[in-house]
Length: 257
Image (tube, rainbow, N blue to C red):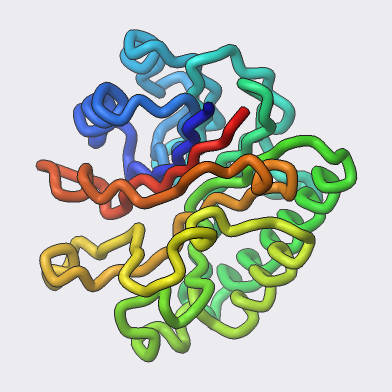
């Protein structure tokens, strides 16, 4: 059995005590991290290795940054999403470990929607679609995890009307999401959890955590053969309630491999 989790840590330096504590208590086999906010060389590799993990990082100063942690060696496949050689943002890393190809994805937020940020988000999603299509054609076991900055459906937000004009919930965003899903991927969290109130992000402001005013924007998308061996999935809300938490919390799944 392999337990895979994704987590936007919102600065790995600021979140290191929380991350290390969670690794000790939850003990995932593979972790996909986003929003590291550090260059590759500044990632706390030694501290993570002390917890028994191999580390692969695609970092960037101040912004973005993604990583894969695994209890087994990681063969890195890609550290930049193909399709745009001019895109230097550290938002994608893909590797093979423990019998499965995994990608850690930090999809662009896209706000404000009347700026170049929204077309960039949609362009990134099209490139992700093309990469997922390639992976499907390869017929290997894979999991595409990360902060997608996409609210897929009304039940994924405490108040959908608040988000109607937001880049996370606009019709074009949801259409691009469905295009990826319709390749044959499975939203792991929704296999056994079909109700509302299943959130992965709570804004630091306005007491959103205490009021449980969250949204679900962190996802694990499974290839068909990964979905076939899915045992369980869930959201670990625990670290969101710790001192100095990320505004996101881990989403996880277990595969029988």
